[in-house]
Every structure is written in C-alpha cells, then in structure tokens.
Length: 251
Ligand code: PEP
Image 1 (cartoon, helix red, strand yellow):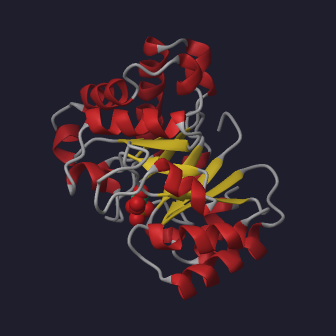
Image 2 (cartoon, helix red, strand yellow; image 1 turned 90 degrees about the vertical axis):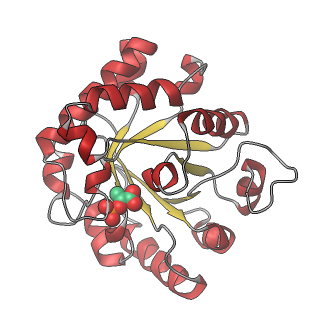
C-alpha cells in the first residue's frame, strides 16, 4: 500500500431510501474515527440527494454510478454531471464492467464521460478489467492498454492526476472469485506502467489504483498489503454496514 487508501462501495441497483439511509447512518457511526483513509460509496441515482444530505460534513463521500457526458438536453433517461453535483454528490463511477458489457459502453463513450466529469469538477473513478477469456488467452496487458489509453485519450497530465482507477477483473465481479493479491498487484503494476508511458512515472506513481472483484472482510487485508493496491471498490459486501466497516478498517 503506497498511498492514502480509498475504500469505496458500489451499491449497484440495490437499496431504497429507508434501507440506504439506515446503512449510511451505521457507516457514519462506525467510521467516524477513521482518519487515515478515505471512504466513498456509489449509490443509485434516486438515493443521491438524501444520502448526500445525510453524509454532508462527514468522512463518508458519495458518488453516482454513471452519467452522460452532455450537461443538459434531450437525452431521456440520462443524468448529467450538473444534475449529479446538484444532489450534493462529488464523485462519479465510470466504465464499470456492467456498463461496458451489459449496456455496451465503448472506450470512446467512456472517454467522453471522463472528460465531461473533469470539466464539471466531478471526481471520477474509472474502471478497467479483462474478461475471463481474455485472461485465459494471455490478453490482460492488451486489454488494459486499450481500456486505459482509450479512457485517457486527450486528457492532460493535470486532469489525469485527478482520476482514480479501479482494476476490476470481470470474472471476479459478483462471482466470489477474487484475484490473488499477487495477480491483482501485477495487474496494477501493468496499469501503472501504461500510465507512465502516457504521462510520466511521477504522475503514474501518484495515482490511486483500487482493486475490485469479490472483496470481502476475509480477503481485504491480503489485498491491501500489496504495494500497488491503493484501495478497494466493493460491490456485494458494501451492502452490509458491519462487513463494509471491516473492509474499510482493513489491517
Ligand atoms: C463491483 O460492483 O464493482 C464489484 C467489484 O462487485 P463485487 O464486490 O460484488 O464483486
């Protein structure tokens, strides 16, 4: 672990107002004493405003799970960066594998979203990661290169430095299969080398790269002990206050 960790949760399409507020009230109480790491949750659009209000002034930050790149317009069903900011949320998750593989998002679209988020002052977490067949076909490096270079296309060094990356091997998301700490660390190293080749070593070294994919209370410590792993993006295990608190408080 090289820098201040960022421990984040992705609620996906789960929770309602009552259960979401209950969960964040517990997190607030459990994590008020956490001083040496950052905490962030990505909640459904309908819960952004009430949860941002509940967490205002606390050390638990809130973000949206997706956005469109235009600031307004005839884009039925989409949500803009300005609308996210209007709820009080300051972060946005982009390029999650479910967006890429269920909804067909391309690197070009994700790149437009990333530029728009930064232009509007939203803090982005950009997800990258390979499918099982890509891993088995020895294509990890190629996939990470395409997704990272595609995502960061035409981004200045100053803007790139504001981005957090989440490495999420698709075969480990929601499956109970976690990358071993060694495999995850190796993939993070590859991503850092790609960033250094686009920008420079200093910029790459300073960027936070989170691991996501079946992170649980019983495997977080081993993952977070690795030098290239700067935090976690947690799906299923972020839906329970006690489990997520244990993950946030990894040792
Ligand atoms: C995720 O939703 O980004 C994720 C990593 O899910 P899970 O922890 O459930 O694998």
